[in-house]
Image: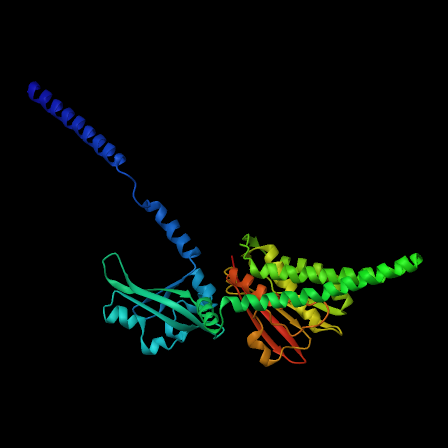
Length: 400
């Protein structure tokens, strides 16, 4: 009896020892395997980061064609906040002809296609057409059952614009225009400087005592040299692309600094400034210096549009639910001369200006630079104007 009990204990210990050895061997075998892909604990932050930072918009719909997810980039492209779209049918949001003629849902879900790809136009929140390239595929649950569809879309408006530009003119024609504009604009102030230098030299030779009277000439030379510097700076800003140094910031602080820089010009121009800001303006991600350049350019345009004085109103508002604001919008309104309808299509074209020949103006590159900076910050700019009454620039940035 004792021998049997002893044998049982021995067998149990041997079994336990063997189990420990097997587990250890398995553990060593697993540890020797190379780590492929991401661990499960990293998948959630990886996917969240991917959805947050990718430039293409993503949304999902269920089998009733109602939106169940809308990415940050989708908001940037369309202008819709999350609360605007969740639970609503996609055709009610985008109001695109594709919903009637070639619905991606019908192709992917009902006809059994693996994917859907097409270039289409959708309408943003402001009802403006946005050309996009769209890819759609089925969304399945853990049991491999179809529960809806995923759509990825990319704004291709800039691509279409470039294609149109290439069809209309080649690169050398554009360079020729720029060169001609630079030569013309820089030549005028240079001639002024040279003329006054020669005049000063002749008069000083005859009457050295007149040196004090040359202060007026010197101030004119200084002004013209400054104009030349601004022309060259605008040309350089337009021709070279400087990557923005993105960081969290409050747009009202940028506006305050811009107004400080232009304080003297606003005072001399007899322009009354009124600021209005709604509470809870969200932070945005941006480059302080580049955004300051945006507001300085727009406010300068307003100053030049009100040569006899006027009013400048700057209003900042937030869009979206309290605590979940999705956009910060700045409206800059003046009571100036306004912009005619025929000039609207050319407003953001390089080298276009209605102020040719006026003192202190450049090459017509200010607004194209403004538009480029805003686009690089995932924002958009809209202009409304009435001749004789004034102009309003609306600049919209996505929240942080």
